[in-house]
Length: 490
Image (cartoon, rainbow, N blue to C red; front, side, top):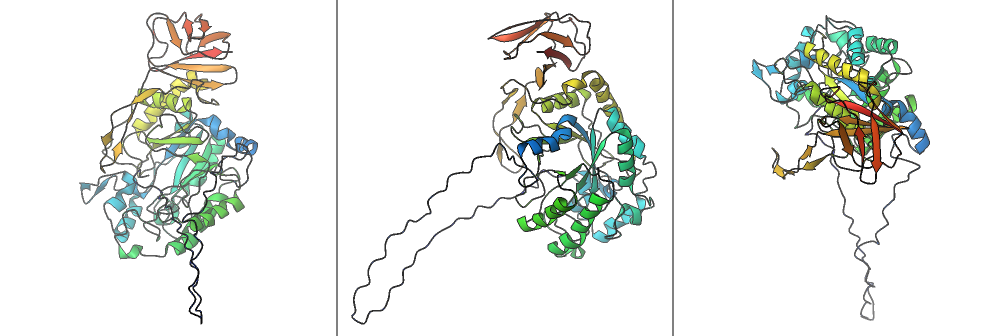
C-alpha cells in the first residue's frame, strides 16, 4: 500500500489543421483563398450516466445484475485485510536502522539489492501460522470476509506457484501454501476469502517500481513481466482454490499500467472468473466495481458507487516491530459506524510477523470490536446509507501538505450516525444525552416504535413533526460507553 502512488490521467489536445493546396497556374492566376475552417471541432454533448448500466467490471452488466453480484459484499460491511510476507523478517529495519515508511515497502525505501533481500526468505519460518486462528480472529471481530496479500510489491508469492521459485513454498522453510489452508478454513467458518495481487509493481520479477529501480538485476521488460509472471500467477490464484475463492481480487498501485496491459489482465478475469468483484486499482482507466479510499473516510462517501475504506490497525500495513500505535476501540467503532452510514465497507488490516502470528494487540482489539458487534451488528450488516441528507462534520482551514499541495481537511462531528434497512432506521449515538431524550432531524417515515439494542427492556417513545424526531425514555447512562444504537421501526 502507498497513498503516494496514484493513476495519472492524461488529456490530449486535438489541433485540427486544414491545408488547401495551391495549384500552379500557367496563366499566373491568383489562387483562391481557402474557405475558413473552424479552429476547434463542435463539442459533443457529455455522456449521461445510464442508471440501468452502472459502472462495473463486467461489460454491459445491468443494474439488476450488478446489484445481485455485489449483494453479499454490500451486506458484509466489515472485512479483514492481511498484509503478510517476507518484509516481516526485517520488520522495518535494514542494517540496524529504521527505514521510514510502511513495513512492506522496506525493499523499495531502503533500496535493498535483490540478492540481499531474497535471503530474508530463509528466515520467514511461519512456524506459528494457524489458518483456523487467522479466520477465527476475523470472525470474532464480526468480519465477514478476508483479503490477504497473495503477492505484494516485492514479488514474493504467498502461495505455491509454478511460475518461479520466489514463493513461500519453494523459498522458505514453511513448505506449505497458506492460501490453500485459509481457503479451506474460510469455507469451514463461513468467511469469504479474497486475494490482493500486485499486478504492476514487482521489485524481484521485473515489474514496475515507484521512484525507479535501484538494482541492475531488476531491469526487465514490463510486458514480459505481465505475460510471464503476472498473468500466469493470476490464473493460478483464480483456479487453484475452489470455485468460490477468491471472492474478491484487490489490485494495487498501477505503476506503468497502460490500457492495453490492463485489458490483457482483465481478459483473464472475464474468461476464468466472470463476475468476480474487482477494485478500481488495476490501472489503464479500468474502473472496477469498488472505490478504495486509503487511510481516510470520505466526508460523504461515494454516492452511486460501492466503496471500501482500507485502514491500518496501527501505523503500518506490513509488520514493523516497533509500531505500537494501535487505534483505540472507540476509534475503530466510530469509523465502522461512520463508514456504514455512508454506504461503504471497512477493511481493517492486520500485519502478521515472520512466524505467521497476528500481533496479540490486534487480536485483542478485534475481539473487543466483536463484542460490540454481537449486540449492535444489525445496525451495520445489510444496511444502506443514512436517510439524512447532511454532512456530519465541517471543513477546516486549508493547509499545505508535505508536498506543498493545498488540502482542506474534513473534521468529523462525533455525535451520532444513522444507517437504514427496510423497516428500520438505526441511530448510533456517540454523545449520550443526560436529559432522557434525543432529537434528530425530521424523518419522512412514520416511526411506530423504538428499541435500544443494548437494553431491549427500556420503554421508549417517539414524537415526530416537520422540525425533528425526538426519542424519549432514554436511560440516564449510555447502554454502551462508545456507541449506543436505537432501532427506530417504521
